[in-house]
Image 1 (cartoon, one colour):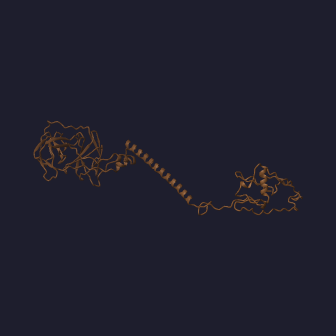
Image 2 (image 1 turned 60 degrees about the vertical axis):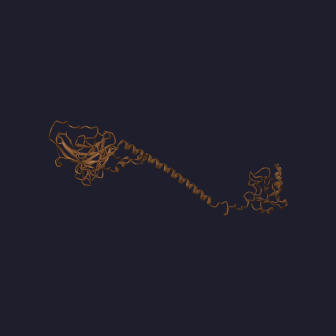
Length: 428
């Protein structure tokens, strides 16, 4: 009946998962702000026979009268309820009726010396105000003591003189919970409802005033009322909640999972980044190579004009010897085999070229000093040297100096490398 109908702002499941993976639960808890209670509008008033008398005779009827508040913009909603919240006891709620302007009796059954707070609400959770400071005095003893046990309990941090925040930890009962504050000096009866067992309750009581707290669950079961606390809101001597150094298992798991997934995400991003960077570097190098001029091509991209290599020759009858060598090896060398390079006349003594069909002039022949003695002990020199006829069917060095064992410079066999269609060529 004392519960407020308000709800904490909702949080989507996606946002919760994202926060759990990317941030530590301890950081989120430290960064969250306290939630201020909702102060209902005072839509009516109540009073006693003598408002200045704050004594409550034990077990004797106490007369209370209700009146409407004509200056309120909020319409009262019947029926109406009267709440007595004694310190250390479970609050009791008494049904009053459906109309304002009448009177009813309430009987205090608490032990002598008990501090009591009195308040009224309607069915719309509008307030009739609250008054603190009542004390039970001796009277009749023929009444039962109210219940002091409850399945719901709570602790507050700090225990007194809070600043703007009070951390409340609730045990027992069923969610959602409603935290109620009674501030008789201002007539305030405020409530805060939420799904959490750990409530960051915003202190809105002016500095120097006393207030009391109790908790009600979704079934209407209430906790005992706390002792009086003095607010020090916006004061230099106020107390902030003391943060616990212990870390819950859920916080540890959340931090570890968040760290691992965060590191994995960074590693994946780095892998694709460097992979793309390397591919881009290869592509740029390839483009640079394409843009560079080819050393084997001219500036306009065409192939250069290269003069083919010509094998040197020494005599005018090379063509006849080449033909004879081909015949000895079983081949047939005719002009029809090489129409592009065969000379029109063999009497010219030249060898065909790719660009000029006429043979070039013969190369100058080396001369030898036949009178000298090139090597000691060989006084005959080259003049008396004899040379054997070369066997054109055998490659290599075939005519040698009998004195030195060296090949005569004019006795080399020149061969065209493998893969060419021309027959072997010999120069002597």
